[in-house]
Length: 486
Image (cartoon, rainbow, N blue to C red; front, side, top):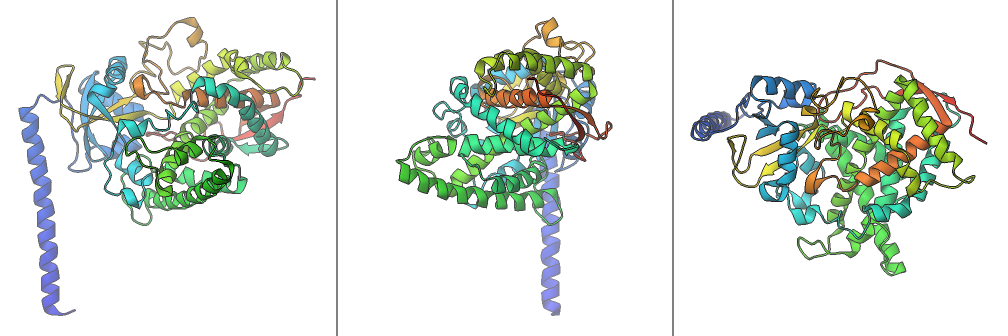
């Protein structure tokens, strides 16, 4: 190497290193100064730059939050996660405060990893704050996610669930319930949102989505070997599948007079309310991919853990089966489920609620402070992230007697206080797909318990902690076919 170039390169590295160190210390000093001048909540920012991110992502979530509630405050504490100063609002009071002030004090915010995954190259400079008008674009799509519109979708969903079980469960001795739950929810979601029924593409998307979900809440380090790198590769492959189908959809709509049958056709034919312009295909692909992903992970996790708990509790399985058999007896042979049938599945839905209480499919979600505000006597500065989490209420003995026990009857015995078990969130940003998810879960439970009894191949299967719990090695179950009623 040329000596002069070596000196130049070494000096440049030294300058860059020194500048980085000075910047870190300046930010740390400024942060300390800001803390002294502002009445911030108690807590710790942890290590420089990374804060307490690794404990937040990889420790048991209930333990991470619970330890800090004991150490600092049971109502609120500060931390630094995913590169952001963050306050955690705890308990029902915290949940209520967020839900009651969504449009006054908070803006929706997604972690940087999630934003990069669901944002193609044309949006690189976009903010991680989600404009409210864009956020509601799909949920306001004419009737797609409203209960009155879903009434007509129940029969089709019922038929698809039954076809899935006949294809992937019937005649099998052992199945991997987690993978099949993912396949089922994605088959339903791509049909509902897009009109996609190509099993080959759906199978590919299941594997790609599974890889993407592992990086939703992680450090966005895009270098080979990292979870985020693999997820970015999977996202690009998934985006290509979506874009290819969007072109097919446009051509089909052009030949049928632009009729709106699903969310994708609505997005193609309707301008973005934020800009007033029709969206290009790459933007539609990102948005529809985000919607499909939202309807993929949590329902698949919930379905998986319902299978797990029913295997562990044969007494509860029998009660669910009895309820579903009563509904089946009221139907004609081959008659699909309808909306009224779903309203009769009260015990089955309590089982689902209890599964989501003990193992929440999503531990919590983020907001951004839209302006300075005060909570519990402390100041939360504008731009700070606000995190609310179900782990501060779901296992709280104040609300749930013997919270570690799986007891669906607890929802029959007493009326729980608001904001105690809220798997779909609450307030203006409550999950717009909650009724859709309910139909999906109950349709699956109905046909599963009627057709099968099962046991866990590995009763001690490991469940990960962190934001999105899942069975590390899958959930294999040994099936026993049940005689179908005449």
